[in-house]
Image (tube, rainbow, N blue to C red; front, side, top):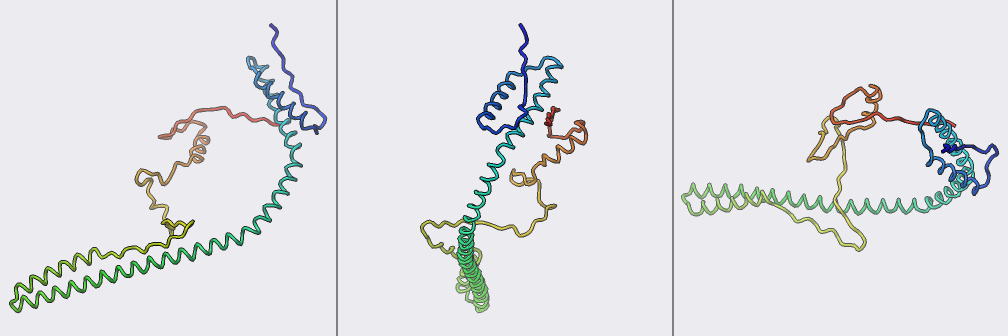
Length: 236
């Protein structure tokens, strides 16, 4: 049985018909799917075929470039007009969020301030009761002194657990709030590799590839398994 010979050709004339171009690339795809390499000649043919693919791809890119450029300019003009209208709204939204956030932050500041004031008041009352107990004990009033000590103990607990309930954020339909935090400063050297099982410093794959290539595939890196592969490229 004669071996089927495929002929890969690229029309010399510039292709301007999209339907014809589509048929050409479809035919080329079928040819590629039936490609079989059994000899050095087959391998050389495949290389020429690959180079032809690059030329055909360049033709396709050239064909669509004017349409893409025109569509891009039209799209950009519409996007610019849209952006001009959306920018004031986004600025306004940012301002409103900042004002609302500031209100919530102020309410939390007042809550913490009231909590601290309650703690200080309880501590002051505890000290007063301790002094009162000492005075009563010196005066021979054992029962009064014991009662004052008990009240001092109560005030000690109050000072330890002084908590002012958080202010309930006003409910507004369609508006939701959630806690968030902002990083102020980072000391990279102090950041651990992982916290609670979560890696904070992931493996830099690009750096690993640089090491492998620099060693020409001779380096061994714990935890890294790699294999040699063939990278093909074509030039039209």
